[in-house]
Image (tube, rainbow, N blue to C red; front, side, top):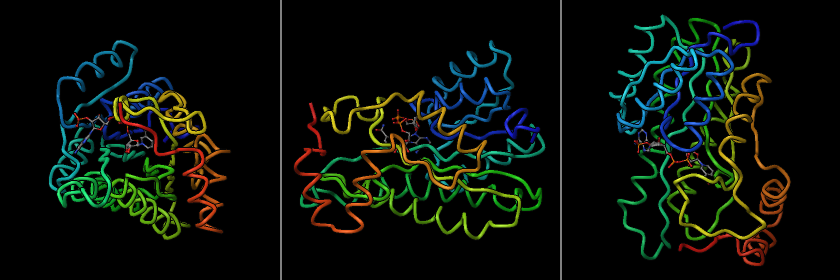
Amino acid sequence: MGPDRIQHAVTIITGASGGIGRDTAHVFARAGARLVLAARTAGPLEELAAELRAGGAEVLTVPTDVSSEEAVRALTAKAVERFGRIDIAIANAGVYVRSAVKALPLEGIERCMNINFYGSVHLVRAVLPLMLQQKAGHIVAVTSVDGRIGLPPDAAYVASKWAATGFMNVLRQELRGTGVYASTILPGRVDTPMIATLDVPLASAKISSARVARAILRAVRTRRRELVIPFTGPKTLIVASAVAPAIGDWLVRMLQLEGKER
Ligand SMILES: NC(=O)c1ccc[n+]([C@@H]2O[C@H](COP(=O)([O-])OP(=O)(O)OC[C@H]3O[C@@H](n4cnc5c(N)ncnc54)[C@H](OP(=O)(O)O)[C@@H]3O)[C@@H](O)[C@H]2O)c1
């Protein structure tokens, strides 16, 4: 990686065609990164790649379902084949399943785990040996404030995000001294297609995906361990829930944080 760690850095972004991933691709391209973009559907990836190339970026697109270990290994192999190394890997692909536990089919839980948790794990496992060999690299996982608290009726999503947050927490500590870094990004509500039909209260107003994208760049530049964005409201809730679950539950109820599906 270059002196500011982003210039020329070979950067894999999963879920690149959607809200946060798409803006992250733009932000990293502007900072001079070389991009490897992944999502399941080829069309939107190609459109994004064309936009980024028009701005002067080097871009490789690899349609990938992150829930498949084999597909993620093929993704990283293609990145290495094209660029010879991988500097930054951003596990961002994710899905949201909304259902109360009593009505939640097992398939909904598996879907969240397979994409949100195992999708991130597959990327970590695929890039780690190479990054350790390079003695350089940075792994980012976009989890969620839901990776530290629980909002009804999101048990499947919340469980997958807690799992991913926990995995990254341990990975980060194990990487100490290796030259490889790990950051976890925990956004609150973000204005993307994922929750387009969800009305949320002012207390958890949606922030822009561009803001989250800039935070991801900052986290890599400053090697942040964890970044909660926006900070104040979510951090207050995380601390309150950790110290006294009754107060956490009360805040969720009082502020009507679960929102309403339109
Ligand atoms: N929006 C929020 O309020 C919010 C808050 C906190 C955290 N997050 C997290 O931020 C990340 C990005 O979310 P977003 O809001 O930007 O979502 P989004 O707009 O729905 O975009 C999701 C992206 O992930 C891709 N994707 C979905 N399933 C995939 C799979 N199996 N394999 C590969 N790519 C897949 C989608 O493309 P294809 O469908 O073509 O694959 C799309 O590019 C997610 O991890 C999400 O949980 C979002």
